[in-house]
Length: 166
Image 1: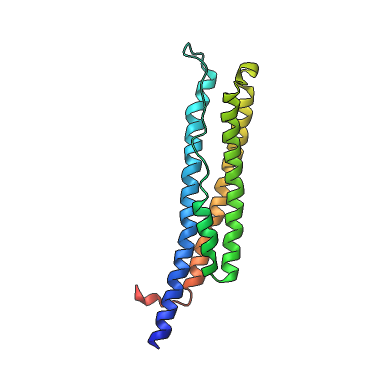
Image 2 (image 1 turned 120 degrees about the vertical axis):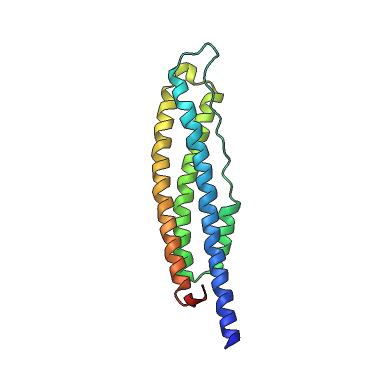
């Protein structure tokens, strides 16, 4: 009986660690998105100002980190197949949108490096920022879906655990 309880605790612990890996990814990814958003918030007003100091500059502040993504994906093997599948789908959804945000951030960076703003008076910058804004809104909805899926996974893997231990 003690051996069975120990096995159940180890399984639950492995499950929780796997779910926490998804949370780690969500947190890291959200930090990256926040850095991009803050950089654009600081940059946007400058494109409408006349300055004797020269043209405004923009540099994309992040490089997407795949460590947390790979950790979540590899840790999913510890979860029941249906739980892992649902979490991985949400993870893929949010990763695709994060890549789209990163692409727009880098497009704005390249726009400045090539000094294209001199040709169009920042018109393309405004277009990229609008596209980036839509991607960030989409990111937020995918992030919410991942959080809900993690909550569902947590309830699923804990449904058989002894809740009176805490």
